[in-house]
Amino acid sequence: MKKLSFLLFFLLCSTIVLAQSNQSVEMADELRSSGKIYVVIATICIIFTGLAIYLFSIDRRLKKIEKGN
Amino acid sequence: MKFIYQTWWKVIAVILVFSTLITGLLFPVPALPILHETIRNLYFHVPMWMGMLTVFVVSVFYSIKYLRTGKEEYDLAAVECVNTGLLFYSLGLVTGMMWAKFTWGEFWSGDPKQNSAAIAFLLYCAYLVLRNSIDEEQKRAKISAIYNIFAFPIMIVLIFILPRMTDSLHPGSGGNPAFGRYDLDNGMKIAFYPAMLGWSFIALWIATIRFRIRLIENKKNAIN
Image (cartoon, rainbow over all chains, first blue to last red):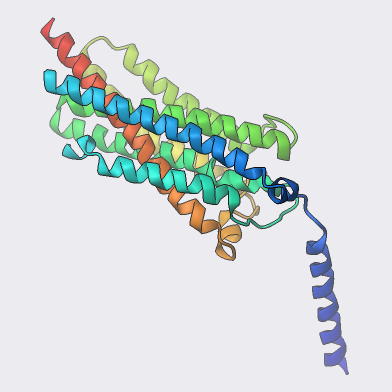
């Protein structure tokens, strides 16, 4: 009986923990469901691509100068 | 040092970071209170520190090499690595402050992590001040190399060890869960590890570009 009540108690504990984790945490679900997160991703990707191309071009120019020296 | 003139690793770095821009923003993350979507900062804020750490390690490596050989270019490599590291340091600090505003309530709340990061920042600024205050080239190179070797472990202790031993609000400190808990049971690794690797190589890339410019400048100054 004691064991059983312990078991019940622990089970209850776990349900309390579960209930707490089920409290909704606000995430950017709306942005995701309306598909507009892709706009953000596209923006960031364009910026990063631009920066990467810029870095590569600096690299190339440097190579030319190094050859000239 | 043929490695720094090659292109393949730069392409890989760009691809890695590019992939994390997509996976980092789209892949599911655990819904945690307070953090909410800012948990995705793990893919962008933390890699800044990784990039900083990479170039600082390289800088220490070249400082040691300079002390062993006395070759001037090793000294130049060490300085340019620190310069690049400080750029990533600033980016890490600013993104961290930005995040703190929305999770802790204030840009700067005097958290141990923030304070010791600021101290370590000054430590590296002092390195540059020290360098610029010595006119004689060999003396400057030698003293700053020694300073750099000592500054590095102090920076590690200040940023990565001390805040973890006290009560810090920062994830991964003082009983707060680090990324280890978030990513082990979730798919966060998929975006996190490529981000760490990619940004480290981008930091290294910028450092090599600075170093190559410095070499040309140095050559020009020697002729005149």
